[in-house]
Length: 396
Image (cartoon, rainbow, N blue to C red):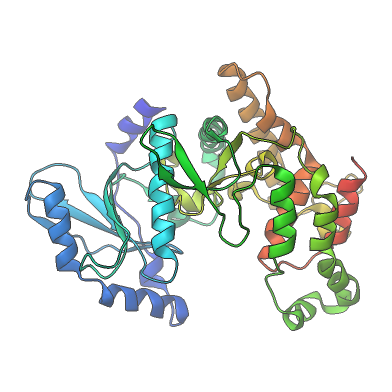
């Protein structure tokens, strides 16, 4: 795959960063514009120039924007490849930058996952740049979401095959505890820290799920939830209210392994929104600031590009008597998920991985639905959460 990436990069047609320029007035645009003005760009160029032995540096006009990053491309007059720099100066982003850089160091040392190389970073605010930032190798491609919300059907098979290869590669990066990567020791091992909003590090999956149930809350107000539920509010609202308590009750039964580590590295936002592609051939995976070693069940969730709302959370009218979606787009998503499982299994067998833990979890529908429901709960998605739990309990 590496040779194919290199060959593909020769035909790169340019960055298509349109998100920032297309933003309408509102808090996201205001935050981005405030950051753009606050950064001392000349000072940043001085830092960049030092990275290249004094080569003159300039910033290209394109602006890439994500939830926690603004990306600019820096070009040099020495003829060598450019560098992107990124950062958003707010709140806990210094800690996020530290976690991301150490996670990338871990990936570089232990895997072949395609990632931009780190050429330098500053996480403090005393650099004169007025923001934490990092210099990374510039991949000649675009984030999949910049090209469109959906992956074109013609590219599905090859894209998801390459994504499955990366997913399996990540499954081999394992740490002793559940937690983030906060530092590298002198002997090359890594220190782990708490997961923001949950805590840790944890020794077992049970501890993680118990902490999740204690710390997490539904991502919408009660009034908003009732408004979204309409005539189903009297059934859905108590179903939502009981979900974290139910997860706490079954926390010790969720793990299909022996509950203890080592635990695989979860990206935590693994979808084509964080995959750099050129003509949908994968060049790299970015945005590792929220990554953590986590339970296999969390790691084994489908990529966001293949996510669905669990059937039991939804109204049954959208499915036939066999549980197959009536909507053709959603039906194709189900087909793609099946193909993805097959691609993962083939990759595991090709690497002579005998336990097949990842593909087994991907095929465990009821566990998949429970973990997906946990993510949707945090995002404020209305649904019949109690039915998801009941469906899971019936299988154990």
